[in-house]
Length: 230
Image (cartoon, rainbow, N blue to C red; front, side):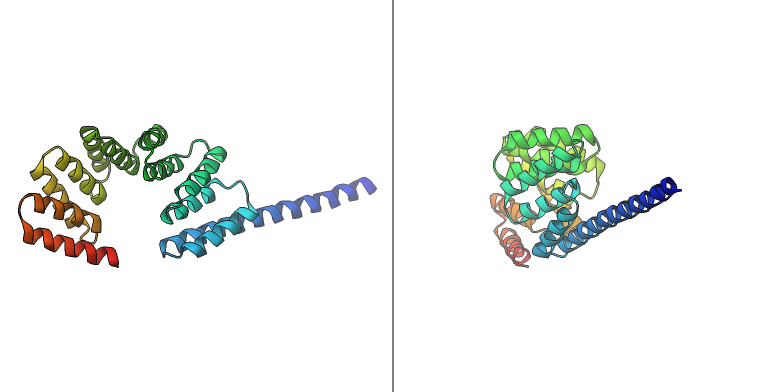
């Protein structure tokens, strides 16, 4: 009888412990989701606080390290972001998004070859990953491999037809190769897809100036300034 009571009590304790742990896990997920929402709304400090709370409850939570790193990158803390991506990857080695995102931070620090290595790893895990192709194209362009960059932008666009950043980026590489008409078509297409994408106006203004179209260049420069200030 005593033995039965022991196992009954032990079972109740075990059930309570498991329920408590699940509750903490659920709470950590809630904090992570709240952080993602705040990040999308531009509340970076609020997002960071939520991620800290999530990690307090669940220290080995790779998605939170990745998400916190994204905020650090947006705040231009690229080294801090890389530290968080490293932690995420130590917990989840087959994490293509973390490899891709770490590549972006490396690119911002001028480590273009290191960035390409991360994009390669991301694509080995997730072959149809348009962001990784686009980002690898950017790093190739920085290294002067404009044709290789265009190949990556083409692949990104084959996977996502309305990828306006890839059109804009491909236009830059086309321009470097002297393909002025192709570059202008890409810039125009990017603007058609997203008229509020500031960066492409900067690129097109530069191209118009090269072509002697000073009025069009001035208009694009003004549009760029307005969009950047908003």
